[in-house]
Image 1 (cartoon, one colour):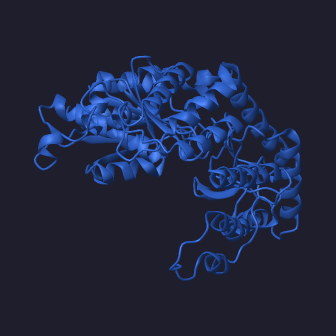
Image 2 (cartoon, rainbow, N blue to C red):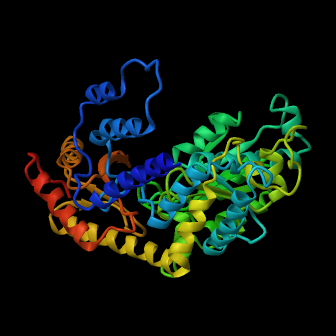
Image 3 (cartoon, helix red, strand yellow):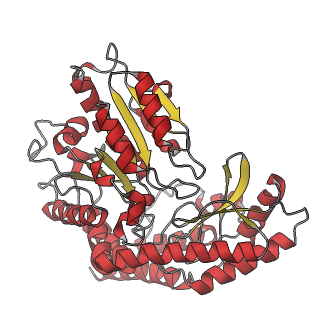
Amino acid sequence: MDELRHLFRRAADHAADYRLSLPDRPVGVPVDQAVLNEAFAGPLPDAPTPPERVLAELVTAAEPGLVATAGPRYFGFVVGGASPAATAADMLAAGWDQIAFNPVTSPAAVAAETAAGTWLKELLGIPATASAGFVTGGQAANTAGLAAARHQVLADAGWDVERRGLPGAPAVHVFAGAERHATIDRSLRLLGLGTDALHPVSTGPQGAIDPDALAAALRDAGPGPTIVCLQAGNVNTGACDDLRRACDLVHRHGGWAHVDGALGLWAAASPATRHLVDGLETADSWACDGHKWLNLPYDTAFAFCARPDVHAAAMSYAAAYLVGSGGAPAGADLTAESSRRARGFAVWAGLRELGRDGVAALVERCCALARRFADGLSTAGFEVVNDVVLNQVLVGFGDDARTDRVVAAVQTDGTCWAGGTTWRGRRLMRISVSNATTTEADVDRSVAAIARLAHGIGGELVH
């Protein structure tokens, strides 16, 4: 027993040392992947290896290849570093090794999900009667929401898709903005609807769906099973669709409105940004990530549905050996996973740590820091091409080739990390401010590094 206690403490010490190093650690450094692979490689030993030695070997092999995604100057993708309480709870969850399938396999895991799901719906303004499935990420959340949508629109047309499948089913028309996230397309593939079912709808200057274009597309499509995918938080610009008007259009057409709010749904948690997602409560299903703006551990996300019965009908299953299945939808009934880790503990802890005011402050601070980023880079002579309404900043450094060179230089430098993207036919640097520990000093330090590197790269700036 003392050996187990010592091993777990050593693991916790390693994790804490790493997290404490993040403010001063290079964010991303070049690594020879072949060398890193070799550190993990070699033949599987025949004899058992003492656990403490295994842990030490793992730390030694992994350390050179760790990217400081949990740190205050990582601005790639939309990544929030996991908060202290949420991280500690996740460590406990691993130690407890609970199976969050249903209340029989872990009453505590399901209770934590139930409580945290209630808090999440309050924060986001989602109806209290909606279901909340705890999934891995935006992909899984969108797939669950669209599975529920597929179930209901086909049921409305007299077709039981869970029993009869899609062959011979009425055609389902899916509408989404031209700047939707790519997970929508993959969800359609996974659900058998296919991307040919998708009708892209034109978007406005910042990437939000054009409501007039949506109205015309729905009118031209005529009656029939209809799903519309809306967006809260364009993945490049942060722009949000007019959810109230769009949902009204969808429902007047008899369709299902799904909101991909992986990053932008958190705007609802702050009075300062709530207007950007006005009307979200009128949708039928919602997808949202917790490991983005809420600063929960990977992998944590949520699939909400206004119709819990539909959600469960689309996702659940029962079997004679599954003691406790078939009751009120919970746990695995709302996801595509049976072997579910107890991620609800970390969600519960992270929400308790922040509280309602803390979540709002986190959203507001990240938005303010994104504007600081934009102001700093603009003052330095670079082009900010989007309206910074949330935590996303798009920056151009001249022609596409020069911009890509700047992005590569920043990633190699290690002061901060930002990715590249293509938006409206241009290569741009994409900066996402999502970490609760990021400070004004972190932003200023990053702006200075980006400016230094960009000015050292040849080519003319284009404004």
